[in-house]
Structure formats: C-alpha cells, structure tokens
Image 1 (tube, protein in one colour):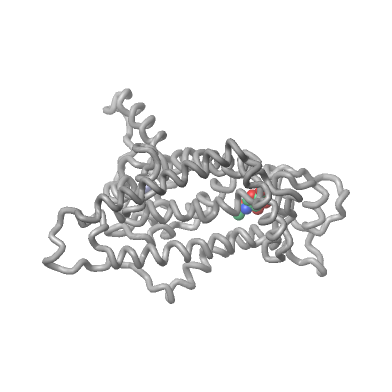
Image 2: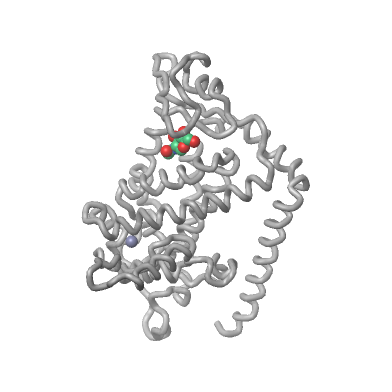
Length: 340
Ligand SMILES: *[C@@H]1O[C@H](CO)[C@@H](O)[C@H](O)[C@H]1NC(C)=O
Ligand SMILES: [Zn+2]
C-alpha cells in the first residue's frame, strides 16, 4: 500500500489538471467545443429513443447499474479500502461481505420498485423543458397546439390528453439547438450545488421530524455501509430525492443536454458517498481540500446518525454546525438522533 501512495497522488494531480483545463476552456473559449456539441445534439435529437418520455428514467437505471455494480465488485475485491475496517488487522481473518448484500440477478424487484412511480409520471405528464415552445410541448401531449389553458413552465404540470389513439405520454419535446458548453458546465455545477443544499434541508428534516424519520429509517437499517445502500430507500425518500434533483435542474432552466450529463454524474457521486470505501480516485480528493463531503463523512453519518447531513459538499454542514454551537444546546433537539 505505502509504495502505491506517490503514484496515486500523481493520478489525482493529473485528474485535477484535466478537470481544471476542461472547466476553464469551456467557460473562457466556449466556441472551441461548439461544433462537437452541435453534432452530438443533432444525433441525439434524431434518435427516437432519446425522444421517449421515459428516456431519463431509463438512463437513470442504466447509469445506476453501470456504476453501482462495479463499485460493489470493488468493495468485495478491496477490503483494504473499506473505511469500517481501518486499523483492523487484515491478515488474520478474511473480511466478510456485509449482511443483506444482493446478487445482481436478484435485483429485478428493486429495479421495478424504483421505476414504477417514475414511469407513471413519465407516461402521464407532459415533459416541460427549457427552450421548448408551448406548441411543441402540447403536440407531444396529444393536444391541439393552440388549445388554451396550459403553461410552458414546469411549475404547472399538464396531463397528457389521453385518447384511444394516444393512450400514454410517450414522447418528449426537445429544444432545437444545442446549449453552449459554457451554459452546460455552469448549469451542471449550479444544479449540483442547489440539489446539495436542498437535500441537506430534506435530510435534516428526516432526522428531526418523527413522521419523516420513519421513512428515512430504511436507509439507515444496515450494519457496515456498502454501495447497495445507495438505493436502499423508502419510496417516499427516493421520490423526494428524484424530484429535488429534477427541481434543481428545472429552476435554473437547464437544457435537456445538461440533464443528460447530470444523471450519470449525480449517480456516480451518490454511489461513491455510499461506497464505504476510501477510494484512491475519490472525488473529494480531486476537488480542492475541504470542498467535497466524500465517502468518509457519509459513512460516519450512517454509523452514528449525527452530523454529515449534506450529501456532496461541506458548506451547509459547516454552517449548521456553527448555528448549533451558537445556540443554547440544552434547550434544543440536536439532529444527531440515532435513527436505527
Ligand atoms: C422533471 O421535470 C420535468 C419538467 O422539466 C417534468 O416534465 C418531468 O415530469 C419531471 N420528472 C419527474 C420524474 O418528476
Ligand atoms: Zn440520514
């Protein structure tokens, strides 16, 4: 292990450099990337599957399997990375796999429970994305494009116009042009930061309010944390999570292409913080020190239920800690209530 150390930090340093170069060139010289982006967008737009109303749900399930399964394999193959086993003698006894881990073949039911509520929304509501005309939205929803009474904002949902010929909302209307790379990058960063803060508040209330606490319990009922805990959620919490992510994208008017990049990035980080692993390529090592919350903070939250309520970054947690310190702790219920 100790020999590999310098090599790791070199890898982290190059990952940092690449990320910084990509970010800064995207923001400073967006035209560099435009031809590529335009081509990608025209290809996606002309692909019928991409126009399905269920596209994002399918992409989410696909990304989750493509990320969580290898992470579970890494968990099994690298006991030396397991945070819960730090400092314990590793040679003496082989590490067991945590109880409750499922084989990939046994996970059909989990996938079904996950997709059913989302598919229901996909197949009944008109998709309302930024940069799409109300006429195009209405046409996708089987309406006369000039029918009155509908709004193009996502804040006012519209049901599909159900008919025998068009029994379900199967299409989504897409913007005509690609976004600029500057817009895409800024929207990605902004939506992650907004989601992170919103989920902090949701998570805090799930630890403080008895009703919500019941729903959050499913996510905290395990021994050692492992990647599969990511999706071990009560349906209410899972829906809350998806809707908050959707809201974070919608409120800043994200382009559909931003949404497509958001899904795998969001899931990657979500699985990573639940991995229970001290990964050599962890995102909190790549980001400037102190920015990323990371797997260690989240494992600690799962182990004792206190602190570390913010999923991806640290800013809300720090702010909340300071507020807590200033208050008279004797009269206030602390969020560190154990939940199991
Ligand atoms: C996400 O937001 C869009 C509006 O941009 C909406 O049409 C869609 O139904 C939402 N998806 C979910 C799963 O809520
Ligand atoms: Zn929690």
